[in-house]
Amino acid sequence: MSAYLQTKKNIQSGHFSSVYFFYGTERYIVDDLIHEIKKHALAEEDRTVNFARFDMREVPVQEGLEEAETVTFFGSGRVIVLSHARFLTGARDKDMPAHDLKKLEAFLAEPSPDDIVIFTVEAEKVDERKKVVKKLKAAGETVEAAPLTGEKLQRWVTEQARGQNVTLSAEALETLLAKSPGDLLILEKEIQKCAQYVNFSGEITASDVEVLVPRSLEDNIFQLIDAVSENQTGKALQLFDDLLRTGEEPIKIIVLIGRQFRMMGMAREMSKRGYNQQKMASQLGVPPFVAKRLRAKAQSVQEEAIARALSFIAETDYKMKQGTMEKKSGVALLIARLPRVLAG
Image (tube, rainbow, N blue to C red):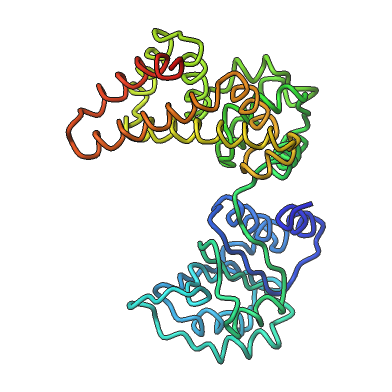
């Protein structure tokens, strides 16, 4: 079980730490854990007066800590969030307030047993060399809010479905992740929609997901490449036109087409080296079923053809960015010509 899911489970069962440290780029995880702490640690009538949030980009850390040191006359304790704590990273912000890190270290050595103080920062890494970071990690629970992939993402989806009193068939799980890969907020809403469709009882099937959940941008790109590789130019151009109507930019579309071909090349190479589906998924940073799709598609396209496609995509992308080729027509021309490029 990931640190995120384990920490959430502890919170829901009433086992709290006095100090939490959440860092990473997956905002949903941070917001979800704060929501759970607020819900389970504070009585409903105390959540207004005993919950406070301080932005460390504007307020020095010692001011937030003073809130934790102030006696409360309502309820048994407070939940205090000190967000955007960029002084825990290697960033050098000129406008950062004067944070008293000595006071923070003293607080971490003996945190208030009645209060919960949560530190958050949206950064992939923190500066592990800093004394205050070491003390913060030692004082309580730390969760890295990194995007969920592979088995961790599948477990998260399964837990969300269970929370709605439903289950997902294996095919439904695969279809859902193909349509909404990786975005936890979108996935949460789609699971709720599917659960409501089956009256919050029983199993969600793949056909339910097909009917209810719109295809993601990545899934549309995969469908487009399927059409290109099968010489279905009309279908591929229709998919491109559909993407434009939903507001997608041509530059973004060509980048994703290139990404899919690169991943196909990587999947082909991994297959040659004997990687199983699970290991391939881990290396590519995608769910296992996506790795399965990539491997199947890569095996149907020659290695030299993938290389030619990537070269053609890079050339078109360069011309578009240089302004020598109009973006919309450039991508349309790329899609129209890719079948011949793949055929050699």
